[in-house]
Image 1 (cartoon, each protein chain N blue to C red):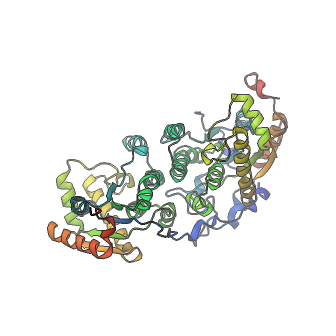
Image 2: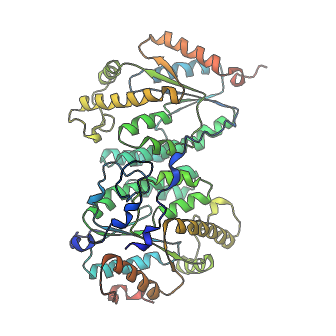
Image 3: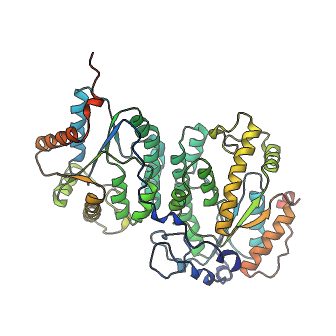
Amino acid sequence: MKRSPKNAASASSNGRGSRSSHKILAAATEAPSRFYGIPLPGVRIEELSGTLVVIEGTDGSGRSTQISLLTEWLESQGFAVQTMGLRRSYLVGEDIDALLAENAVTRTTLALMYSTDFFDQLERRILPALRSGLIVLADRYIFTLIARAVVRGIGRDYLHGMYEMALRPDLTFWLDVKPEIAFDREFKKAHTISYWESGRDMSLSNDLFQSFIRYQSMIRREFEYLSKRHGFIELDGEGSVTQVNRVLRKRIASHLGIRSTHYQPSHALSHLWR
Amino acid sequence: MASVTTDIPATIESARVKAAAPQRQYPGALVVVEGIDGSGKSTQLYLLKRWLEIGGYRIHFTEWNSSPLVKSATRRGKQRRLLTPATFSLLHAADFADRCERQILPLLHGGYLVLADRYVYTAFARDAARGCSPHWLRNLYSFAPIPDITFYFRAPLDVAVTRIVAGRPKLKYYEAGMDLGISLDRAESFRIFQERILSNYDQMIDTDNFVLMDGTVRVNKLQKQMRQIVGERIDLSQFAPKKK
């Protein structure tokens, strides 16, 4: 998705001041922390004028639909948008696909490959976009990666340490849906349930439905924990696309200082509007 | 903005994870060699391996950066020079995790003497020289079992650099630390990069119980010392061939 970084000015107007109370982890510096811990080498925080908006939620929560709609809405308002998501890095995106297909990968290796994928996108796509004042819409972020690894028995401390150089989002939305609803939606879409989304590597149940429900419930519990900890904006992902989208627009508009939240999707996206 | 984000807990408390020393719960043993390029470590480990092989011991040899898992990514990253200090480090950690979880740990549990040419200390020394936080690195590799012996081969910078430069037509981009932008001259950049790595290694001698080996000593004499230390510190009889 290549888009020109025009209209950077309005995006940069939102204040970073409210973060100044957060000190950089284990460091004596007084700089406001846009990172969870130690900043990435070579990143100057004051250069990052864009806005990072994260949409989290399980498969079947409507993330991708909402991101398509939000992109169109933001562009119609004159904001340039960049997107990111899991396994989309040039460096290792395809390698992870291959590893997952073979399911011959162990949990720590997979966690580190996902981390490589994340930081490659962050450093080579997201930070440049934020320097240019773009709005970055992230289709999942470190929270999914942390939750997936935690339910597989990797320590929270270990994972939080791994991602301490990650950028703290400006807004994190969690589209929460019950596992049963997510199952219905996913099954309708693909007529099957994926090996990894049902956590079959964890030997939870031989029954695919049971396995999916138990796995997604574990992930959801971890998200509840993460949500409290990191101040997610929780949205009812079981609501209609239009309802969820209205709330998203409202929150993002108030963050960016956009007055009007009116939006009617173009013909190209009207099939999503239900 | 404000209200939503201001209540975020200020930090992720990963912080004080000391190399969460995994308890030794296996019958095997782990011997590793570390040191900068040209310190003679690989030669010495090879000779140790030959000694044990010829004696019929249950051993396995493993080296840094050898898993097929990340080969394509590493090649892609290096060819097009896309690697940053963070992704360089993470990719090597993924590679090491794969070797650790699928090779080193099962072999240690299966009662093997595992010999490793380079180990996590390579990442600690080299990636910190690239600007990664030592604390972040320690956490990243905290799943790795702690070696029974870590031999640190130390040769003066000039000796090591001369050995490497003489043996290689051209230093590679990342090998020479060109990504750090220290110097446009590859040989010069290599030298400064190795100097930083050497100093990082030196700082671990005490904290990580390195056995210091003088890389300028004659090969056969140094090997004799190495074999003696292995014999003293590790009960080799448990890896010996069964007598019939």
